[in-house]
Length: 318
Image (tube, rainbow, N blue to C red; front, side, top):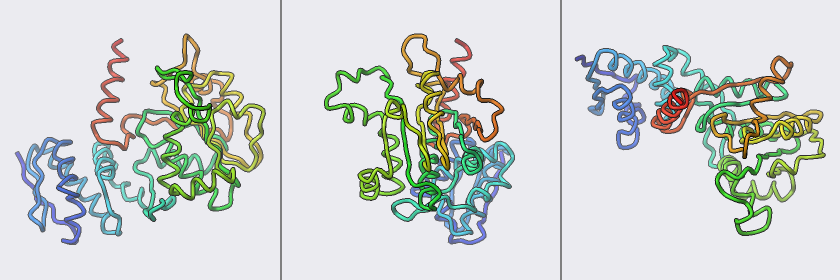
């Protein structure tokens, strides 16, 4: 058993490091199986040598970021923990040097881990980017962030967001309303991202003008999308033909992001996912970049990453 005391550079940092109702300390305690408490001036860590060492490493990384005026929250703590496990906390502060955009409430949006940083860097440098990995890695949200940032800078004149309306255990025909009302629930994650970043009123106004278009994938057929930022979400539920149709919509001065999770294919029968095919067919083409996320890149509650890992192990056994 070991005990170490962590003293931040400023006593004002303690409250930010501890978190609301000691939430950040609980994450550290649960993650490393140690006891973490604060006295108001310092943080006391007790437990196994390795756990205590990791917690101190995380606290130091977080303290460095807090010193720059950044308000940290649970996802930041989780990111620091994952980087401590990999021995890369020296790069933790790099994640906070760039503000991608500010949300509807004026809060800065930044990448949360190195996986997200690779993803955003790829989007900024390539015409077509594939983001492949589990839920909770921020693929959809960051894609929308990058689209809005490009629109605000005048790099594109419109944003097009789409996803296939594949029935995951439910039948569209039995849902109430017209086609738009039937399909809207499938597009809800995209709406949620837009509302969080732009606010409801601004989003609705831009959609009324046609500056932002949210539509099912079938609506893309026969179009050429020039001067646009185009995002295809839930791409694992496209067929090979649909994926080819979508990618060939790319016009001049446009960018495309294709996101999907190989473990959540809902295509009926034995249809093969167009996302899986695209990885093989498009490999090596200039200006097309594939970014693969793993459970380590999940920025939701730490238990989500454990759930994903547990299911991945089950799939391997099966």
